[in-house]
Each structure stands twice: as C-alpha cells, then as structure tokens.
Length: 61
Figure 1 (cartoon, rainbow, N blue to C red):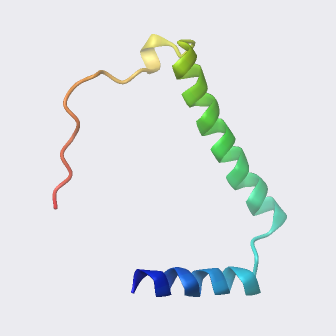
Figure 2 (tube, one colour):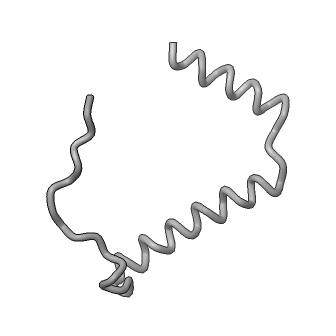
C-alpha cells in the first residue's frame, strides 16, 4: 500500500514539478546539514553546541 502512495506522489510531482526556488531551498538545507556534520566530524564544532552523550529518549510505540 505504501508503494502505491509513493507512486501517486511521484505522478503528482511529474505533472506539477517543484519550482526552481523550492529545489534550491531544499539543496541549501541539505548542504547546511552536511556542513554541520562535516564540522562535527573534523572536531571544529564548538563544545557549547554539542549534545551530551547519554541515554537516547525513548519513542513510544
């Protein structure tokens, strides 16, 4: 059933593709996220912005 929903969504996008501005915005958000991950990986992310390592919050089912 989920595949049918994705197929309908892809069909909708094929008929009405997102604008160039929307695509640029999504790519910018992805680039910022990857930049943050890269800074964290290189050890250049400030200590005040890091999360404490502890128990992950449990998501109820």
